[in-house]
Image (cartoon, rainbow, N blue to C red; front, side):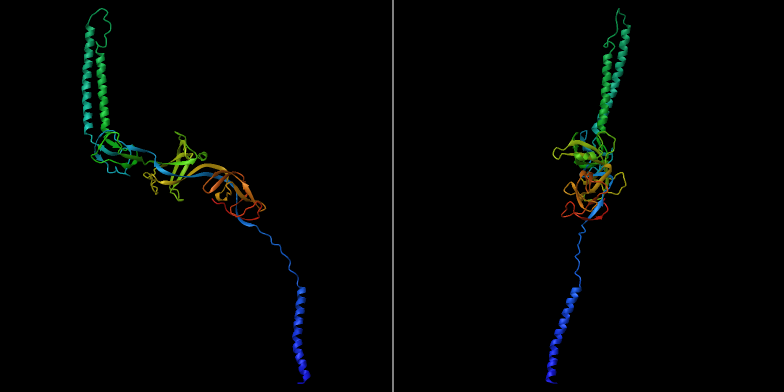
Length: 396
């Protein structure tokens, strides 16, 4: 190869890459000029996602919640009416023992009282004889007076006819008859009987023990009905039906359950108010009664409503025909709510509260049926905030 050819080949190796690079740069620039610039897109905020419920005016029964301790409706001290030695004790005369009305709890030695009855009967027999004798003396005295002939003798006096002595014997007979009734009553009292259906709460008596009349030997509580005293704020009483003293009107019903959101086990009703305000708590007290708390006359399978049990009570008050109720956690700042308006903007609304319940709040003003209540909690809520509402079913 000649020197000229070698030089030409070497020059071509240098120029060719430069030429290729220049063509590539020119093509890139040309294509860049042909490409259109991207248009700027404006992104619109869709709004804050919130749950809403549509408000409705519907019938609603007011409910009040309270707690209380079960107590027997009747409870008395067991007190013998006569003195004497205990001769017999019922095997059920122990704490928790149950008795029906009229059943015998214990017996006191009755011999002295039986002798008193016999003595009273003998006294009656003597008094009847004495009365008959005096009646005969009175008849004879009147006959003798009639035989006497005296001018202007007039009418015989009570001493002449023995009328005074006759009245005295009649009084003596009445007195000994009363003594017999008292002796029979004391004999009857040697048996201490259950005054009503109930159970023994406590006892302190033993066989052979000498009892004195009027001394307590235990306590006896009724089992036909239990009562629960419930303290309530005075402003809540107008929601309830509370019978007046001596009234036959039914009170508001009540569901009673064990603490801890347990289902209701017993049914009762308000029977009265104690009619006074506690000076310390400023609370009024109503009384709920429960029939047959120990399930003695019914076959319902549920536990006993025992004395001393702490229970939850749900009182069913007045039925309101049309009222707007909202979930309690939808109330903001105690008396405000958030509403989603027609433009999906947040509106802060002040409401008038009629009654606060456990899970609901009843309103008497501030909202109208058909409005959308926001139930979602927001960290920042400003009037006019754009929303993206999601309809939900109202919670019961």
